[in-house]
Structures are given as C-alpha cells and as structure tokens.
Length: 71
Image (cartoon, rainbow, N blue to C red; front, side, top):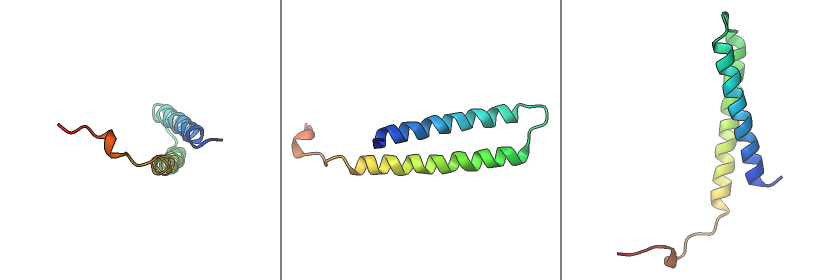
C-alpha cells in the first residue's frame, strides 16, 4: 500500500470514529467508557496521520531557486 493510500485509509477510519463518538454522545444514556475508548483510538489514528504526512513531506524534493518568484 502506498503511503498516500495508507494516510487516506487512516483519515477514513478517523472520520468513522468521529461519527461513532457523535452517535454515542447523542444516545439517551451515552456509555462514557466507550466514548473514552473511541476518542483514544481516534487520537492514535490522528497521530499516525500526522506521522504519515510528515514522511510524505520529507520525501518531496526541496524546491529549487526557480520555484520562487521574486518581485
């Protein structure tokens, strides 16, 4: 799996967890333990996304002098 595909997969999981948290919060009697577990998992995925974005940025070549427009 390419890095971009992996990051997109993580973003999809992150969005799904966000929806699950929202659904649980809007139940008549939300399960606080379940919400805490989902939030912890969501944060873990967010950290992985940030790590993947950092690797992706690091793999790009640095801009050359011709990439900048001087006025």
